[in-house]
Image (cartoon, rainbow, N blue to C red; front, top):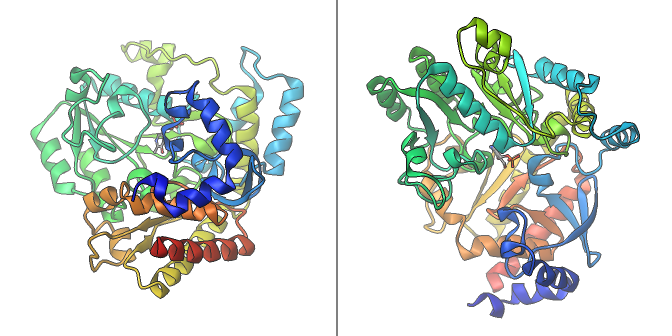
Length: 453
Ligand code: PLP
């Protein structure tokens, strides 16, 4: 059935006429009509005009329980009052001093308190900037050229990480990326420790291994904990830096991120999202001797060239104020546990809906994430097996682009729930029992609607 003829599309269009009009205006301004690829959506994206706690409202007045969560930045929900007060107060004091300020110190001290691996901290303006800087630091520190990455792991959109995530799984450069850059990135299968072991034994030119420690794209393709411990041992043995990209998992899985749960100390960690309390911000943190390449004196004493690093909005006072407020709450309350507990209840409830509908979909996820695998081939696989990294990542990835996947998000939007398109999303510390009941009811209705369509 064509998209236009779908009853789901017709109902979505009926509920969202103002979004449709805004999307029309946007199409003449933005390529594809959007400002972030994750917002591409047929027949048109949703336009939101305000949000509080776990809910948001679109421009037509429809209310949604939100599992987009500010792309994962909003562990504390929309407009957390402590964060909002801190930002409002900072607005009265100034948004950019072009100078050092005390809040950036408080912010970094909180990061250090929560992540003991953060011997030194360098703020950036985004997660993409953080992974870019981390890879450069690793190359400069080791004097080696190659970076090991894992297929489907997302680290932002700069040249070294812009292939092998959703396409170009053969490692070829994607459009606009120099082949020479791609040649210096070695792509491995997720979860295959032997492949990394052989690679590092055969070569002496690998600077770093970077990965999402909860598995690719927010844990959509989970990996076993034993694999991560193995990776730490192998990288240490070969003196290759291990970089945990905790842009999503940092301050989410636990106050100490995924590394806190796993008891693994990476050499470098990249952070963003929750770090800045819902405002723009990122950071690279880690071993002092590596981070010292950013310090002119330490670099000179070590006989090394200093790495230049600028960024107009690094540690800007507004992001610092939001970051300090958010990280303080995360350090001093059970915010992470609440989000994790809610996600576990949500996954259980969704599984019951799937079972009563007689479907072979699998709802899985770890920590405060949930994912719906539509299992197109009807495989006999359990959530536990997927969560333990024991299922074919290609199948998990491929299901993401099936038409039913789009229909799930569409049907959920029609019933007042927003989530990421793959489909799934992050939960927050402020999702309530009412949100759970609302979501499960919406999911039941969405499943019926899809079955009927
Ligand atoms: N790393 C991971 C694991 C991410 O999920 C993202 C963004 O979603 C990034 C890096 C890039 O962060 P940003 O969007 O702040 O550039």
